[in-house]
Length: 150
Image (cartoon, rainbow, N blue to C red; front, side):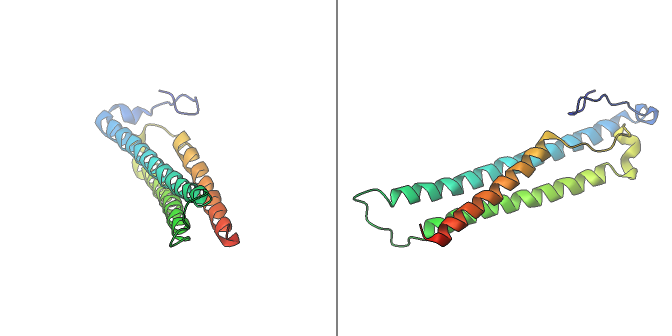
């Protein structure tokens, strides 16, 4: 069996007698990954949609022949809210993910985990961290644009 890092896992002898428990642990571990990936998709949609709303109304208001908006700051507020919610939700998801991994790799489950190597960084957590940084940057860019009044 290969991990994401390309290393081979070596199962402990005690796991062989507990196959059902070991596979239950593996299913739970994969479920944690799928949950994080779902949060990544949700955060991507919220951040992307917030940025799109901001850009659309920014360019729309500059179109010749278009009346000025009744509430010019509303689109910026909605955009900031969506980007902030997406980034915040992703931060909570990362925290929950790391806490659950800490629990799954604890000494209570070391026999059924089947390996002594411990937890690894997976591509999902790396993507989540990168997306969180993108969300923070996007929020800052929209907020600064709002502050300048452009």
